[in-house]
Length: 286
Image (tube, rainbow, N blue to C red; front, side, top):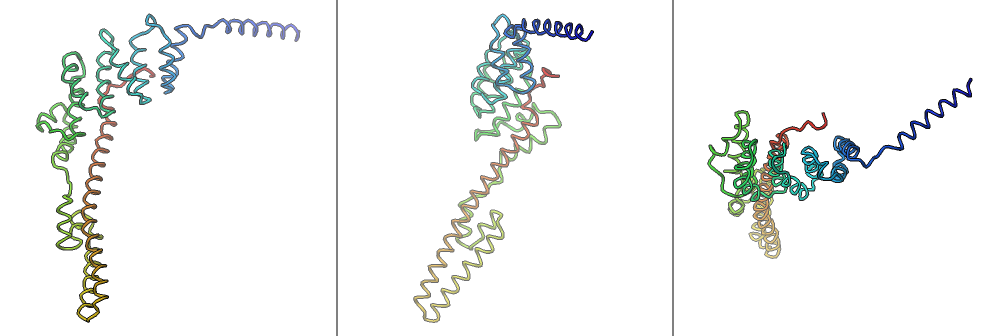
């Protein structure tokens, strides 16, 4: 009885193996199924390569946008722009592709191309996401030194919840809290350390004032006592600290300004990432 059972089990396994062996893994259906799995597993490069094995007749609107998104997600922005620009009407993802194209231009800091594309193509060709496109268009001015639009026009496309935050970004860009390096140097030339205090480095400013003053006094005292050689030595030391105090104040202003700029840009990027660059959420893997 056991022998018969084992025989039947072996036959069943053999049939199943034979059926599995007949599966065509290179069929369009299986290629797409595997690519979908890779995409949802966030293996975007392999997903894109699998999708691209499909012929034009087997390519769907969803597949096209997934290929473009895959390249965007792996930061192959050149390929992403090519794929997004290749998605044309009547694709159901035409509008999303054009907005994604603006996002990629934003990510590569090609703000001139972003603005040109928005004004010359996006406004006239895209039916949806006009508000989102205008937000990205306006936002791009915060990353460049180009003249800002009027504030009312700038914040117009943003909703009520965003307006306060965007308004603060605009005000900062319009009048950044920079420190004048030349003024810091002049102040420290007149009163040692005052330039650093102006920049916000109060402790360093006080130290610079004390050290420069002390060495200058020592030099003066030695001259008064008739120790000319030592007087000149201490004069040189005092002059060195004095010059360093002036130079340090100018440098401190430059460092301060660089830090302010970095923090501002970082804040912009964090906010944009939080908003996902105003791109709609896709439901491909839910």
